[in-house]
Length: 171
Image 1 (tube, helix red, strand yellow):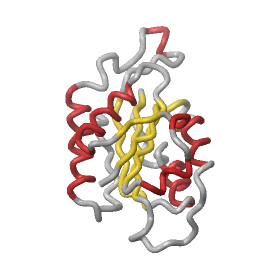
Image 2 (tube, rainbow, N blue to C red):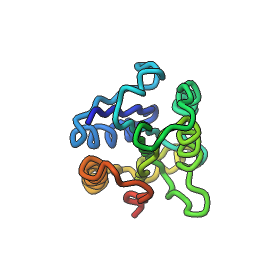
Image 3 (spheres, rainbow, N blue to C red):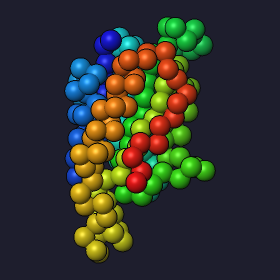
């Protein structure tokens, strides 16, 4: 399975660490949005899209990149490129308004079949947290990275799986 992870990790490298853990299992390359052409994504079987969360939103660079992906139009699910979304954040993802949802909808609108999402907590030094040295200072930790690998194994071992939206390790 040819896999690529497109990752925006700008503050502390948290999201990149999670992406690398997944990439080990998926035998995938991890790239920033400016390191790949949007039109090249059609050549992959599975593409992961991830970023840290800023003000309850995925990073604008990742969202901007996805908006440049050519729409494949209505295609049978068997020919759609499978995708997944992953994120790191200081605060837990609210169940009533997941911050991954807008990216999932954007990807689906571009013709991707979004199989799953993964989130975990991570160091956050956004104000006002900066005043106390940040929150989640040790995250993502070994358990978070292990959960990321397990998530990737599920994607790899069950290519047909979809709709099992993972909440990751929001402990």
